[in-house]
Image (cartoon, rainbow, N blue to C red):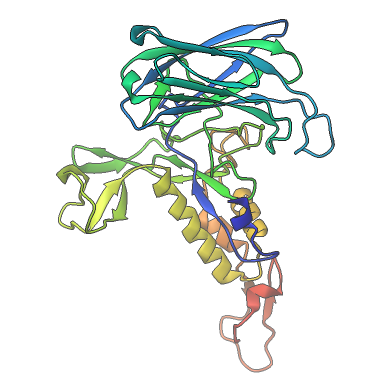
Length: 345
């Protein structure tokens, strides 16, 4: 996604990405395991799905100016148990094993050259365990990294019983060069009557930071009770269809918020076509209405503000009420002469 966002130097390309709707779904845990053989246990409830998997990242300690090089790391013995199913497996660092009944497979590999600076542990589970609660235990056997573990499960596969309240931004919204968009409430659906909303962040809008500590989302935009174009093949309940116009559905989510930012970017580029994608991302952040303290990992740089973003590009014109030959007309731009490109006075 970063490559797409920066595909050509100086290009007018902005990748606007939904921040995610997992904030209240329990799909992420964070645990800190103490040194000297510390232990942590995480509980997981599985849902019926196809081949559920848990991805766990053990943070390394970067001791090199190059952030993609890691010189120190932790090791863990990982034990996964589903007692009601009578299946369990314990795997030491550097090994991969499958449980006796074949329903649990743990890959506990150590790779000191993982680009994001962490050791990747995977727990693959069989659908035979659906509906059950299992545990994943981590016994720290080598002290080299930070002792921090981040685990993720797909929203359709299950949920952790003690989830993290932060750090729920995942790919592709965690990319360096994309603009990740959270959702806030501007209106609500009260028995069919749309009324003004709280203007607070949506309960589902995924919060940051990223796993490596960067601020995400970048901005927030309206994402609840949004009239969205409806595909002819899409199926919705009658309550989700716009009354009197079945070509539109009433939807919610950060996927409804992200298009607002895309549209604002188009307006800004129309008024100032010289901006690069990086400059556009910075413009949208800077002109947002901040929610203190700003930036933060719930709102990012604030509520996106279309008028402020465009006004920074529009040239100011000072002229008499009625201009005649010989009068002075002043044009100025806070940005660059690109604001006047293609225009005739």
